[in-house]
Amino acid sequence: MANIRDSSGRTPTIAGAPPRQCRGPQVDDREPARPPVDEVHIRLRFPFGGVAVDYRAPRRVAGRVAVELQRYGVEVTVDDDAQAAHPPLPNMHAWE
Image 1 (tube, rainbow, N blue to C red):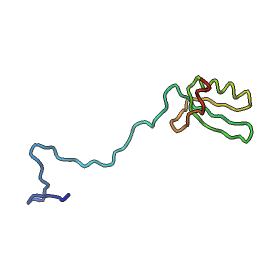
Image 2: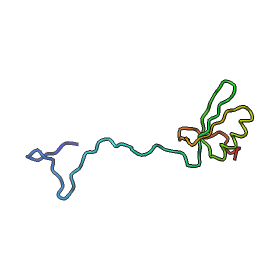
Image 3: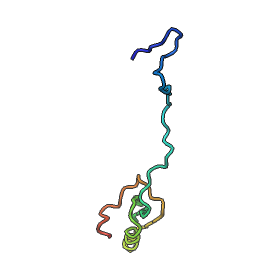
Image 4: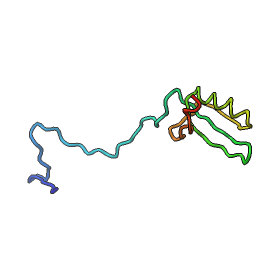
């Protein structure tokens, strides 16, 4: 689009229209996405090899998983630090 200027070098505007303002890049200052309040972070650390995996799950499901897997030597940690980046617990429906 060509820049149109009047004889004084100013860009003409439509009478009564507000001047256009240039905006810089938009900054997203919102909170990062969080999972629903009922969801918790659950970490499973397996006894052989020490592999640890992080998931998110509803609080009641995480409690059931913790009780059951601790019987098999799996170290289970449940906290309120669930993040959207954590994948949901696989086969969660089996624990409901």
